[in-house]
Each structure stands twice: as structure tokens, then as C-alpha cells.
Image (tube, rainbow, N blue to C red):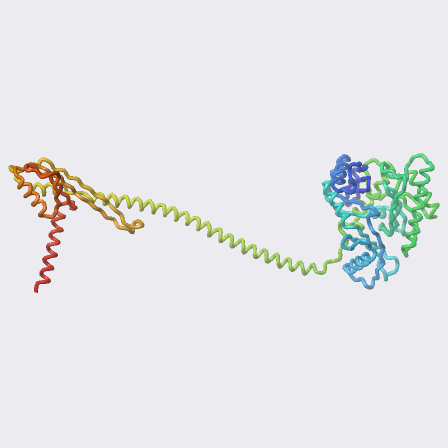
Length: 522
């Protein structure tokens, strides 16, 4: 953990290790803000903080920021014990009292409080309440973000001073001189009762204890010591006026060395109270070698670390005190019900999605199978159409021998006629009628053409031959070319592929006609 005191122009940081055995200071960093870094720009300040920590070899990411007294409104509230029966009522009472005393809107502030030790009157409860502007806490968040730190607390700097000052035997006045301000804190049992901060002239940021330097005495240094003693007396008087409490019993100077001892003597002479330099806890171990002046700068920070180590309560504006949530149980039950609803609904949704996924997978498989079967069926239809088409064509087969025999039987005697050319030609066509296959119908059309020519001794023989060819009705006969006396040239056409087909059809027609005549004869 790193403790950071971020004043206007000076950065003080201490990397500490807090454990059950105590707190160890591993590294420290002390740096002045460069002129090019604007104090109101959190991004620039955060980058400067990161650079300063890196230069000091501090790589810890968890950080606690110390808030100066000037940024916090502190009030000690006396609340009637009889009217406060719960933590919630105490927090509400503190918020109500602070609302009356704050100049800023209550919604724009963060309020934290700690209960002070009882002062002998059980009818009253004393509470130290602190308020800080919400934007200021957000500023520390932005600084930590820009510095790559994880902010763990925003604590009052005076709380660290009070923790080291102690005050187990009664209120003590602690004096802590910093780089820019001097803090005066009245503490009892390690808790703040009263605090004020004073900016004194001639304070230089280069020195951690500017008013308590171990340099040779001089008029200026003695004047500064005198001014600190005067401010200590003013603090003592302000505390006595504002608090109906036990008077301050002693003075503690947060420093070591000759100059700190001189300040103790000045304050003791002016306030007529016992004064001594702070005694560090035995559980606090400091590894770096620090001068008395530098040690004085880091003592308030180390006090915050000691408070974290022993678990004592203090003002923390990042994690303020909140009243118990009386509606938490009801909200937890509602959230549990909503969670159960979400779980059940989610389980149902996942189950439905799983079922849908399975059905979609099955559908995809069936669609794939359907496409495969359809392709196979289309291929089958193509093969069937081709086969049937071939069969239809194969069925168109003329009986050339039969036709030739039929024609030979009707030619004249070779002594008077000689056929010198016979040419047979078969013309066929296969048709399919229908919009789809195989619901349509196949049909075929064929025609046999026979060209026969020859010589005759007389024209009448050719005419007689033509009549014999026509009388059976098997062929239609057409003359080819002009009629000549010694030749014939006929073109015979028929739709019958075989003469037997024509004979069967003629017989069937004759049988039908005979039957019809018999039915009509009385």
C-alpha cells in the first residue's frame, strides 16, 4: 500500500506494508510540483504522481490519499442518546445536523462520522462528523486513475496525527508542521476532537519540517517558532470555547531533533502545559534512513497507516459510514426471486433452444436426404424418359421384306414389265404430350415411302399396275414425273409398318360392318 499526501505544490508518499505484526515503511517519495503541471488538472497531477513514484521505486498500486484539514468541514455533534436507538437513526441524526451547518448542498457532499468516547454524560452521544465536497473525492479518483493506482481510501490527514498523538489520559494538543501548512489537532484516545490548519509565511516545500529546521538559531527561525506557539495557544482557546469538554492536558510535537524540542519549550512556556516530542509506536518500522525534518513530514501519513494497521476507526470519505439497510432483506428476497425466475427462464430457454437445435439438425438431415432423393428421382426420370424414348423409336420398325413381297406379288409378268428400281424410306417421329413426366402420353407417327419404277411394253400395263396397288388401300400411289408410254415411276406411301397390319385392320373393319348390318336386318 502507498500512503499519499498531495498538497497544493508538494507530494509526499510512503510505501508501507501493513500486517498483524505491525507496519513497515519500505520506501518514501518527496517531490515538488513542476510549473507545467496544473494543480486543478487531475490527469496532469496523476501523471506527475506516477512519475514521482516511479523515480522513488514505488510500484504499489493500492493507494490511500490524505485529505488536508482545509478541504473538510469538521463538527463535533452532541446528540441525545434517548432518541437514538439504532445505527440508522444515528446516521440520520448526523446527516440532519450537518445539513443545518453546511454551506454546500447536502446532495453534493459526502458525510462520514465516528463516535467519540463518552464524556461522563450518558444522556448525550458525541460524534465527530466530517463533510467534503463530492467533486473533491472524484478529483482524487481521477488522479488515482491517471496514476495507475487503485484508490482504497480518502482519509483525513488530521486522523493520522491524532493516532500518533494518543491521548489515552485525556485530550492532547498535537502540532504537525508540513511542507505548506501546520496542523493543530486536539486528540483523545487517538481520535480527533478539534482540528485547524494554518499557512505560515516563510514555509518552503523543499523542507519537510520548515518551522523546525535543525539549522543554527536566528531571529527568523525564532520568530517562526514563536508564531507556531501563538497558533497553538489560539487552537487551545478555540477548543475550550467550542467544546464543553475536558481541558487539554499536554502538547505533542510531531517531530524529532533540537528544533522540535525548542518548539516544545516555547509551547510549554506559553500554554503552561507539559510538552514533548512524539514517541513512535514499537510496531512501526522505518527502513529508509530519514532525517528528523523529513520524518516530520511523513508522520501524519504514517499515523494513517498505523490506524489501518490496528483497525481503529477514522473518517474515510471514500467509504463513509452508512446506516444499516433495513430493506436489504426484502430486496435480497426479491432479487433471489428474480434470480430464480431468471434461472428457470434461462433453463427453459436453453432447453427450448436445445430442442430447437435438435429439431433443426434433424430437419437439416432430412432436407439433405430429400435433396439427395430428389436428385436421384430426377436422374431416374431422365433415364426412364431416355429408355422409353428409345423403346418408342425401336417400335418404329418397318417390315421391309413383307412390303417387298407384297409389292412383288402385284407387279406384272416380267415378260411384259420389268421393275428396275425399288427404294424404301421410313420417316418417323416420337412425341411426348404433357406438362410433366411421367404423367403425360407418348405417341409416334411413321410413314413408309416406296419409290418403284420400271419398263412396260404398253402404257395400259402401267395403268393396270397402279389400279392393283390402290385397290388394297395399303398404299397411296402418286406418279413421279410425266406419263410416258414405256415406263412407270410411282411413289407409294403408307402408315402401316407391315402389310399384315393393314390386312388385320381391314378385316376388323369388315367384321364390324357385317355385325352392324346383321343387327339392322329385321
